[in-house]
Structure formats: structure tokens, C-alpha cells
Length: 120
Image 1 (cartoon, rainbow, N blue to C red):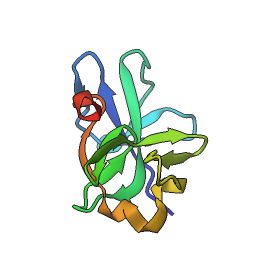
Image 2: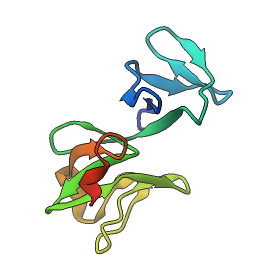
Image 3: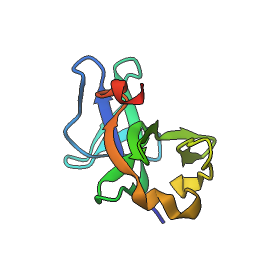
Image 4: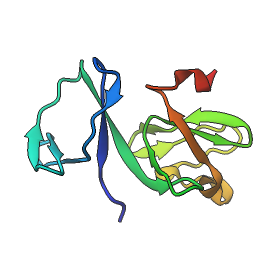
């Protein structure tokens, strides 16, 4: 079973909240360090979920990350209950398990909030 955790992008400050987060049964987020419950305002906070996978350097891969493979940069997305990267020619995404075990060779190079230019 994969670890369920989140990170939170603060739109106004344009930075990641410093603490790690988890979700509680009522749907609110819990700051793990203090166990404080937060009901985040979606206009000011964006929540990204951990995929349960790490890139080739051991870095955790989150929804919204930009990963690189074979000189192609793509966004990690979540839809209909699974994470995926649409490589066009390699599309098998249940929990990011790309064909031919390629998820182990991707590298996180940024994210869509801090580095949107990497997708151009």
C-alpha cells in the first residue's frame, strides 16, 4: 500500500507550505507536525497528492510535478482515481506504472507552479 500524503502550494505567497500534510476522514487536511486540522480555501491553496513513487534519484513524485524522460518534459496528473503522465507513445498509468518499467527512469525537474516554463 502506498503512503498517502500531500503538499500544499500557497497561491498568494507563491511557495510551498513548509510542513507535511495528510488527509483526515472528514476531508480536511492535517498538518502532520502539529496534528492541526485545516480547512483550506481552494482559491488560495492548491493541494498535490504524493503518487507513492520516487524518481531515479529517489525524489518523491507528486501530482503537478514536471518529470523528464528522454529529453521530454511532462506533467504528472491525476484523473479518475489514478496518476499518469501522457507520453503519447507510452501511456499506461495506473499509479504511474508506465510501460516497460519506465517510471524508474524519470527525473523530477520542477513543478507546474514554480517552473511552468519547463513544459514549453
